[in-house]
Length: 181
View (tube, rainbow, N blue to C red):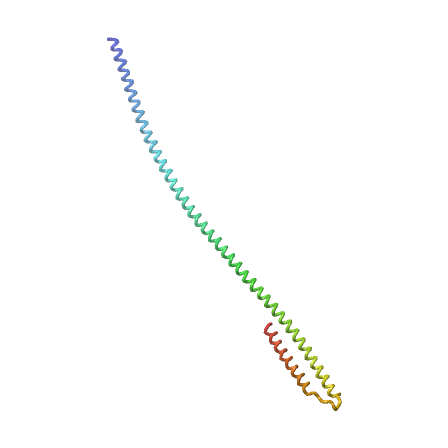
């Protein structure tokens, strides 16, 4: 009986140890469940915070991207405006150069015409002087001619005719010279 009591006691101690282990295991399991729930809650909160930050970052990134696209569009428009202005300036410079060369040509033509007119007027003056000398010589000759010689009335008429033509030419050149200036 002592041996049976001993085994009963050992079995009771074992069951006690097993019960204590079971209680300890249950407490450990409950503690782990609480810690797991707490960790799960922290994980959810961290995940939620990470999503919120990611959404904020995405929104900020999207705003920056929209702003950069606007800036790029403005820069491209500015470059297009500059290119257009450059083309307009080149076109205007070409037109100014063309007009300037046309004015220079006209100025040279006017100068050439003026020189021709002046040269023509000089020749006309010389022709008038020659006619006057001819008239003077004709008068002297007629005075000194022999009485029997016939006077030539057509000669004075021809001199007058040449004088009229020269005067008309000179007047025409002066009018042309005045209008060219």
